Structures are given as C-alpha cells and as structure tokens.
Image (cartoon, one colour):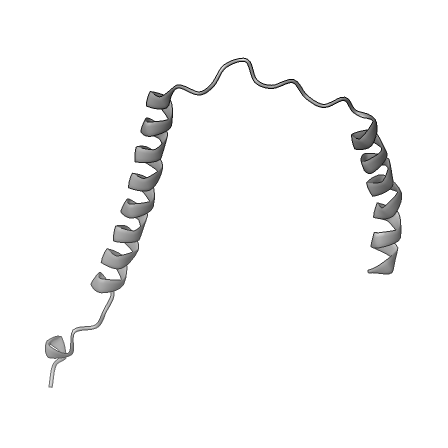
Amino acid sequence: MSRSFSRLLPILAAWLTYAAAAAPADAPAEQASPIAVIVFLVLFVGGCVAFGVYLWWSSRKGEAKPDTEAP
C-alpha cells in the first residue's frame, strides 16, 4: 500500500502544480438547447423506469408456484 502511494505521490504533486499554473477556462459560448435537455431526461428516466420494470418482472416470473408441484 505504501509503495503504491509513494509512487503516486509525485504524480499527484505534478498534477496539482499543473492545475495551479493553468489559466482558468473560458465560459462556454453556447448553452444547451432546452429541447435536447428534455429529450435526454425523458430517455434517461424512461430507461431507468424500464430497467426497474424489467427487474420487477424477472423477479416475479422466477418465483416458484407451490400449486404446480406433483404429489
């Protein structure tokens, strides 16, 4: 653990030095279209809901039914 940390410490110090010396980035010229944001949100939320329904359906389908066993 200490070996890997001692190897990463100079790299981390170099990154911090570089980040401190870098000039701040300019603000973006354009903003995102509201329609694109709405489409993304609808697709993302729809995908999350669909995945949840799939998991629910799979767990419901996989349950054993006690009435189907032979005596």
